[in-house]
Image 1 (cartoon, rainbow, N blue to C red):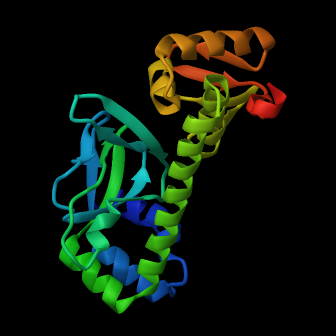
Image 2 (image 1 turned 30 degrees about the vertical axis):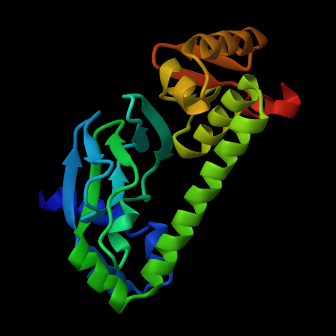
Length: 230
């Protein structure tokens, strides 16, 4: 447990959440967190539940999701190491999580309960500024997604999702950038049918832009995914 905590703290140290803090202050903030591990496909935060904890992803991969009342599970922003989950816990007035979050792979996270992180934010106001910067980044992502939904074709939307994922979860390998993502996940994120996603990926594969395999996509020429180059 001690070694896993040290590894988590080491990764957490580099998070943008701690920008502007002195070394000793970072140590104090990290000391207030507890390490937790979530199995792949398990829920980290529940949509609509009290926002009683703030999480920092230190290993693995996660994503936000939204469950409609009709039962549809909508996949949203993918989360990389160093990103925050559950920022509603920072608010002065108790709130609920707007979105759910889940582990795509096994995840390690640092967790602050609401009282602890609120006390640390009062002591180190720059933490709140950094959290607001993260919230601004998320808002920009959702704005881009909404514009794409209303203004772009299915092909452009899917290309945009693949392009953004190269920055978040892309792995540089011989021959291109590899994404550990399924057709269904891509279809959900781009708001297209699984059939449409499969058809477009097959067309790109014939052009040599991508190579498909089970649960993975190799982007051989990522720059050709952008709409003006399709």
